[in-house]
Image 1 (cartoon, helix red, strand yellow):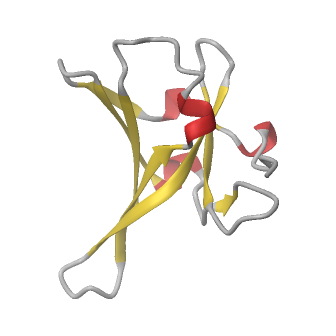
Image 2 (image 1 turned 90 degrees about the vertical axis):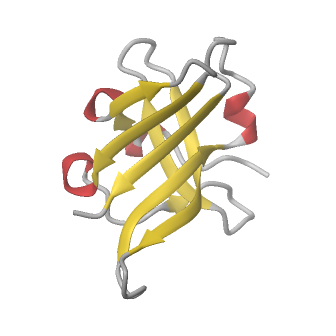
Image 3 (image 1 turned 60 degrees about the horizontal axis):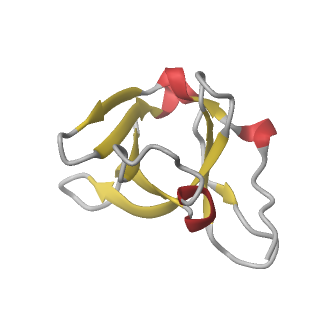
Length: 109
């Protein structure tokens, strides 16, 4: 299994609002129009997993996140937002033990 979601499609991290709880849970939030999000992309060459890539504006490293769930409006017809979690391969690369969990929410505006 090879990761094919690459650097060229990475969203700059400084386009997100970032919050971290004392427990170490980090949430990155942005509106779809701000980050140019239209649809998730395939992550691996031999799997149907889809997601996004984000490039850290501090380190330049690219981290990939898989689509974990969607929020829907009250009618259940329209997607209100997309939730992403870090893929296991990239999660092992996170060196900060203060950050135990990173989630991304892209709001459908």
